[in-house]
Length: 183
Length: 183
DNA sequence: GTCTATACCACGATAGAC
DNA sequence: GTCTATCGTGGTATAGAC
Image 1 (cartoon, chains in turn red, yellow, green, purple):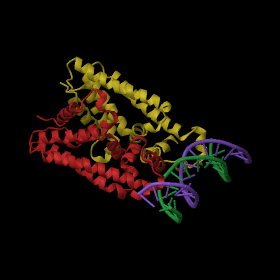
Image 2: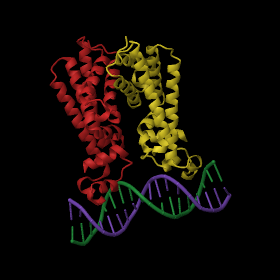
Image 3: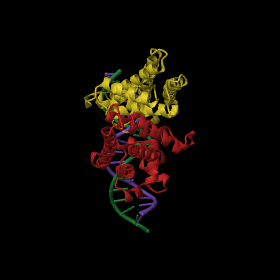
């Protein structure tokens, strides 16, 4: 059922999808949807939370496993960022585009996780800069640029596009290293 | 009226905004909205078209005025890209996020303009590469990255953020030059 | 061109039988 | 837990007076 909601919300938007459509898609009556979730908004909230958690946990784990070298850390972080956004494009789209359809209460956990992921990237960049391994023009703008590249992937990339996933990851890693001015 | 629709669509999404809300915002009765546009979708179509036209014309003009040097061309293109997305953040958001709420017919002109802008960027990069002024890892991925940085700006940048617009433009230009490996 | 009034429909959500 | 049936609301859009 979350899978069905994900498909609908990703392709038509949260407000553009109805409970009736979702019910039809998963072959249930509309009323049956309210057994698992108390409202349409709670379905979206669950998707947004799951998406943010998966993304944040993966990024955090990758950086922790990458050792102490800033370049390795950035490589690991960008690699995961790209893989998450290309492997789960629908989830990425819903998480990033439909989040402000949530009330502040339901959006809060996701906002917090996003903030943490963002800070982790900035800290990696700043640490690399302090160690003279990176020389970005501006750490925050560089982080925003690296994040944006990944966020945009679900809208254009497909494994059938002629670029393999591993190839895409390598390009993104290389671009990120250029953005931070890695030596 | 287009201004009102822009505010609503940008903050609540197309499907999340109603004709009743729009009418209240601009202090008219709902029925009066149908004098200027035959449907809600046509209002969005007009915004999307205007936004794409402004963006494409500005980019095209900037590149044409930049002379024959690929670096100057890329500088000009990125500068305009950043300025458009920061000067008209609401329009940028609606154009990029609500476009697939349009029927294919109404979306077509915007899609065509977007394709042209995208190709212009790729051509600048490829020409710079052929002239040995650029050395990108992959022209298309580089173009996607440069585009994505700008598309994301309306969601985080504000002139009150401590970064001046001219400063932001310079950072983006510098990042773009790094992405394409400018010498 | 803007108004009042309303048609007609789809929406989210609930009640209550099984 | 899933069904049938429905409530109440708000959606887009139109009719017709002024």
